[in-house]
Amino acid sequence: MKKFLQLVSDCLKDVREIMPWDLEERMQQNPDLLVVDVREPYEFYAMHIAGSMNVPRGILESACEWDYEETEPELVRARDREVVVVCRSGYRSVLATNSMLLLGYTDVASLKTGLRGWKDYEQPLVDHAGGAVDLDDADAYFTPRLRDDQLRPRDA
Image (cartoon, rainbow, N blue to C red; front, top):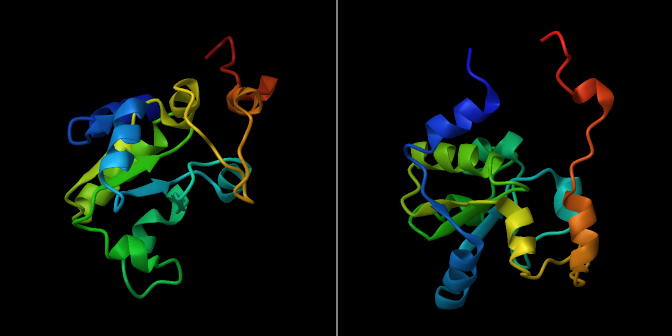
């Protein structure tokens, strides 16, 4: 049985990752670049990279294809377009990027370190209304808060 991080690691054999400073550069050099944020809608609503598209990980594969309720036409048409997939920490985006490669996307990469790294690199984030997010608020938002029942039991 594989654990989550083992699954992510296995996908990295095929997935290309870029760092936040690489994404900043690619966004400046390629105005056609598509940033796909695979976090849940409530996460995207709180803060995201301006101009990014929210396609939650749970519907990604059907959003990438025609004839589904989840179909995102811009995403379907982006198979040969430069795409960077982002999430909170860079793990879900690796899994999503792997799926997109399997679906025929030719120029897709995952943002290593995710939006936490983007924020640490002091790049801008916006809220649902397009307003700038204070990076101190983003820091608090991205700080993990695990409940006791989410922690590994001592006897496991």
